[in-house]
Length: 183
Image (cartoon, rainbow, N blue to C red; front, side):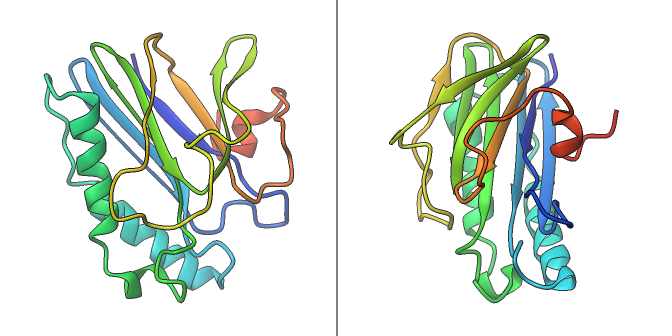
């Protein structure tokens, strides 16, 4: 079953400035990362910063038998190891990332700079966290993996909004387009 992490675009003229997305899978193990960096910088800086994150994550190859936590740690280590000067004038302190991993025991979700997280299904969205949950908070690159939300029930699509997104709830109609997914 494929796994997809999606970051909702900002509600302005250029909703996907600085967005990145990387996926990988092997057997029953999969990961998906979606995020944004340097999103408030000029387009060239944001584009270069986002491609830098993608280059750091693309070499990660899950191996059938990997567990959620070790895969999350490898992904986070790759993000933290990027030289700050390659991530724009804020040196990565503005990075927003949603990381979803799946193994035979379920799904693990981690991230930084998130304001809300939902699971998408055929009929709509289920909120996964609310309020002061540790998964929600400020952007940036903490030195170690942020807390992990584990789900025993498989979820194929996980959607997040950034910490400063003005929409506290998401509308299901047209959601894929607002997450940069072309049908």
